[in-house]
Length: 102
Image (cartoon, rainbow, N blue to C red; front, top):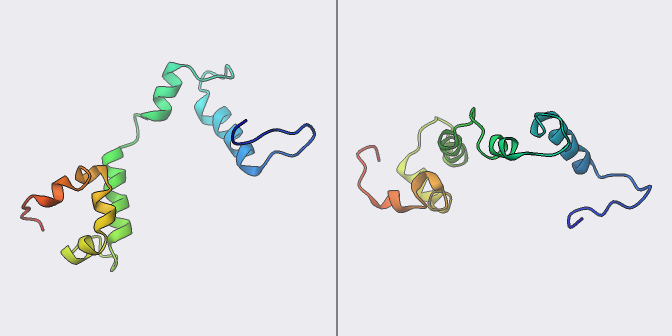
């Protein structure tokens, strides 16, 4: 009700329809109309999703200006705010250490 107050007879916004479909197609695995502990765990920590790899790909995609799939020191420094805000760099702490690859 905080995000959408369903007025009687009024149409649902597209995002609500999409969320309902996501719930019924992907979240409610046993089709009982609610999410149990296992379904919530699968949603929050899916077994087939590598969070570290996804974050690393995100950082490269956003920072790799010349799109050569390699980051230069300048590309990292130009996007320092993205790196210090990333869990992949331990919120910037890893950037203060000496690295041969840099």
